[in-house]
Image 1 (tube, rainbow over the protein chains, first blue to last red):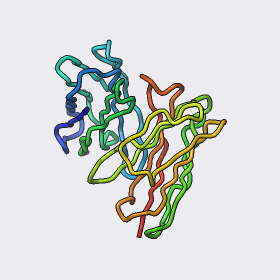
Image 2 (cartoon, rainbow over the protein chains, first blue to last red):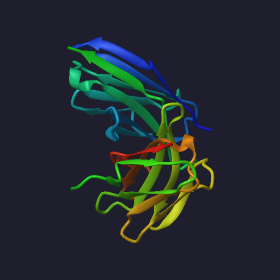
Image 3 (cartoon, one colour):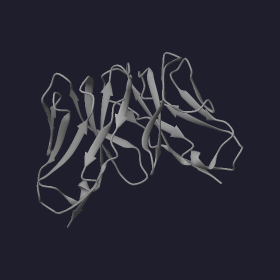
Amino acid sequence: KQEVTQIPAALSVPEGENLVLNCSFTDSAIYNLQWFRQDPGKGLTSLLLIQSSQREQTSGRLNASLDKSSGRSTLYIAASQPGDSATYLCAVYSGSARQLTFGSGTQLTVLP
Amino acid sequence: KAGVTQTPRYLIKTRGQQVTLSCSPISGHRSVSWYQQTPGQGLQFLFEYFSETQRNKGNFPGRFSGRQFSNSRSEMNVSTLELGDSALYLCASSFQGDQETQYFGPGTRLLVL
């Protein structure tokens, strides 16, 4: 059974800092990995999707990497801003399960 | 293009009642998945529908059911509500479901008293 872990559970940084969020998964037989953002009481916004054959994806100040063999992904946020404050979730799509399995998220606070 | 919409946004029910939630996917999307989000369990997969057929189901009791219509809109039903069913219910749509970006709606927050 696929399990996804995110560390740290919460992170508080001053504005302008570069930061890294971590995600690990137990079963490397994945089709893809997605990073989402969730604002309080809201739905999920997709940030980046990395296919299993890819090593990284970039969108603006965000860069996500994937090391499938070691079961790890990182989300790098450059020059953080208060508007980046949210919970960041990673999820893996496993072909055998045909569903997204989510981590418990990292709650990020960027202080002005 | 309009995003995924869910109705109602908020709902209060009492134990033993039943509830129906609705999800309208992005136009052209044929796959709709449902998730339950609670503080204790996080996001858990309920089921996925594709072209009116349930293609996959998570580990939830039979009180949770769903269906999809020919226009890809989906409904989720929970019968005999329990206090533990209080949660944010999210639906997500994609064109075919596999290996694609999932687009989530704003969710329906259900409170069971």
